[in-house]
Length: 212
Image (cartoon, rainbow, N blue to C red; front, side, top):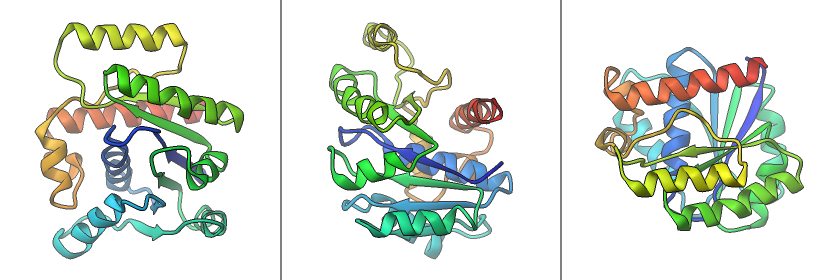
């Protein structure tokens, strides 16, 4: 895997940005890849998770971590892509300059989206920004309930808009919440869980995308 920058961005808060990033990072690290995380969100949720991991988790792969903002983001990304295989950037909600800068530098933008009208409406701004910066973007469904008309209607709406969408989805599972609270990913905390299988499926899809 060549060094890449993946920016996780969504204009709406609470869509599962940090959860998605954490699950991908821990799954990649479990495979032996060198991974760096960059938190540019003032809410610092990713920073809090890293503190849990550093002080409470034992026997887990190391993850590089930075919290930066403003003009320092470009400098930090230039450094990290020379030192690791993948950099994952957690961005703030809303169209702030930091999020724009992270999208501009991304090799891929992942847009987490819950199957709800509000999340879909908010995702439009992120896709528009990625298109403006000429960056590839892909929607990832998060917190997906097992069934329901709302889910099918959301999928149909996204298909109508023509947004590239990952086939793999992250369900509305307690495993994600419980592992996050321990500074872990689902693959580390419950490697045989349905959540871990979902993350593996998403990672396999991204692997295929990057291999072309």
